[in-house]
Length: 126
Length: 242
Picture 1 (cartoon, chains in turn brown, orange):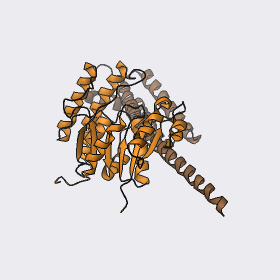
Picture 2 (cartoon, chains in turn cyan, yellow):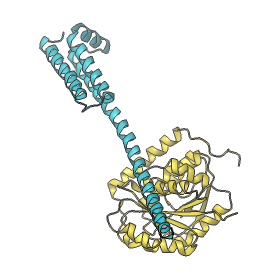
Picture 3 (cartoon, helix red, strand yellow):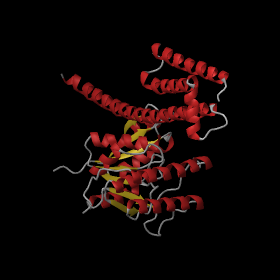
Picture 4 (cartoon, chains in turn orange, green):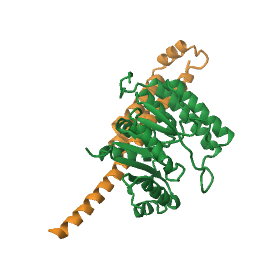
C-alpha cells in the first residue's frame, strides 16, 4: 500500500503543476496548444496520487507488487517523454518554417532591389 | 523560339577570396548563363565581390546550411522561369570548364538530373583519403540499392537540372549535407538520372572543415535520411516507362 505521505506529496505536486500551467496560460506566456500535454500530465498524476486504490490497481496490472508509488514515477516519466517528443516535432517544424522564411526574404529582397533599380532608370525619362 | 535560359546557382559562405573567380569562370564558359550567388549569411564581403563580378546575389539573413542555400537558388530559378539550372560550389571546387559536359548531357533530353561524377570511369585524378573514399562508395552503393539504379557518385554536388528537376528540388531538398539524400529523392520521384565524368579541383585554401565528430554526424544523419526516404512515398514526376 502507498504511504499516505507519498500520496499527499503527489497531490500537492500535481496540483501545483496544474496551477502553474493555468497561470502561465492566463498570463499568455504559454499557448493553450502547448499547455494541453502539461495539464494532462498534472491531472493524471493528481488522480493517481489522490485515488490510492486506483494506483494500487494499476500497479497490480503492471506487476509492481513491492512499491506502488513507483508507478507514479513511471507515469510521470512517460508524460515527460511525450512532452519532449512533442517539442522535438514542434522544433523541427519551426526550423523548416524559419528556413523557408529566410529563403523568401532573400528572394524578395533581390526582387525589391531589382524593381527599385528599374524604377530609377525610368524616372529621368519622364 | 528563344534559346533555353540557364541559371548557375552558386552557394557561398565566406568565399570572398574565391567567389569572383568562380563567377568569372562560369561566365567565360557561356556569357548567356545567368549566375546567381546565394550568400549564406557570410561575414566577409562575399556578396559585394559576387555583385562586382556581375552575379545576381541572394542574401540569406542567417546561415541555413548548404542545402538551404542551394534550394534558395533553385526557387529563384523556378520563379524566374529558367529552363535549366546548374549548381557549382562557391569555393571553386567544381571546375566551370567541366560545365559543358553536364549541359551537353542535359541537352540530350534523356536526363532530368545530371550529376558530375568523379567515378564514372577510372580516369579520375581525385584521390581522397581512405576513410572518405570508403564513405563515398558506401553511400553510392546504398543509394543505388534503394533507388534501383546504379549511381557512381552521390556526394559530388556538381549537378545540372532540367525544369522537372528544378521543380522537385525547389520543393524538396535537405538543408544540411543534402547531396546523397537528394539523389535518392530524385530517383524515387522518377527523375531520370544522367552521370558524366568530371574532374574536381582539390581545395585551394584551408583544409576540409570536416572534423571527426562532424564526419560521424554526417554518416549517421545521411544514413538515417536515406532509410527514412526509402520508407516515404514520393509523387512520381515521370511515368516509369521512359
